[in-house]
Image (cartoon, rainbow, N blue to C red; front, side):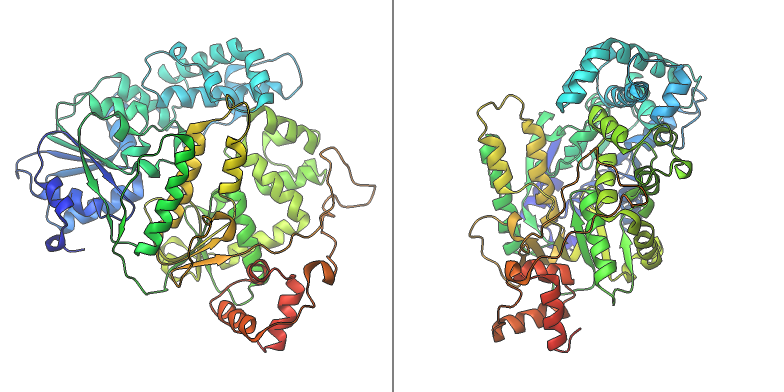
Length: 589
């Protein structure tokens, strides 16, 4: 969008004065607006632009340079804090995140109870430390860590060991404060906030404000500069990282950017209907989204999922079913999808699952007797990533190494990202990005599940903030699409019209699966990964039902557009075998 094509909303922002906040819908040209705002300030003014992450920082710096705006400093919150803190106190930075095993060793911890309870405590110490570092609080005792714990078994464990967890968290933080151990990125941001700095700028432009940490927000609000904060209330998706919606906390004059130049009105209408689900939470204020995009290119195709598990499952379907797939790309580091925060890999979990402990590299998993102990650890720590990786191991077993090799062989490097046939990403990793066509994985919160959650008699255990964020995740997902969006039927609002821009996939009839007990063990000489589902009979899936000419035409169209066999199976509610047979009949196999 050229600067000459600015909307009245953008012009109002550029011509404003004093502290302002901008609520900008997805694809509304907020970066263009901020650049124009900076360009029209006095040339001798000092301007700081705070970007959400490093990639946004580099892109913004490039755009300011191309516009010839040389009085803007571009930083992230962490890069700014780093310059003020690390060299001043001669700190050493931890290049990798601390693991629970590191904490146990550093603090020399011992805990009475099960042999792995000490590692569970260490896991909670790390979470409590991150909670404090991202907060605006001056003291650890000003926070109640129990507020973060959700699952019942984890609540019971933390309540039992709370005083010890808090004490050891203080000790761990104290060692970083004194420089006795390497500090984390969260720690130097917290130290920056507690130094109460006054930054030498006349204007501070804070981007993606809906996902600001309370620590950075405290620094921002404390400045004497003219403050501009921009974001989208409905794109807040980092609450799990203690982010808060600063647009709601900023008592500034409010401006809107409601025109999206990314997508059409059809996708805008879908986004609005998804946001209207918040009415059931009692917190929704209607917004306006005008879709002004009209793109017809189909160069960049993406598959987006809510979770690593959902994304890997779909990637596995693609590399095993779609033989003509030449290359793919995972947003971010591909290995990050295969490792948990604690450092355990899919291979480690598979080796533990198979009873091959000698091949387990991760310290934590190496100390576990079997998969049952891992499941107990997951329940007590609420480690979502480990839980999802365990589900993949249970589903695919010893096929995993071969499948991961196939994925990595097809993966292109960062500098060849645009050459990939398909881009895979979770919503958190594609924040701020856009694609010509988007296909969503069916792992988001559905209308049906939301209604079930809200219809319980006792709502005291419901986390409404988390439900709000789940709706935001689907909103962010659908608004990544510029041209076409393929969305599972279960995620589509009731009676929502489909079109060329918005296509629907329908689930196949579920196949029967063997029941798997958590504590079941394989017989001697039998692999633990014997988990293939029995093939359904043809009559159950109606595989022998005749195909109409209309269905054949639809099958040809979808197949040529690149849908996998599994996707086609879901769409037509027929077995994979029936789809393969029909494709062969149509000379498309």
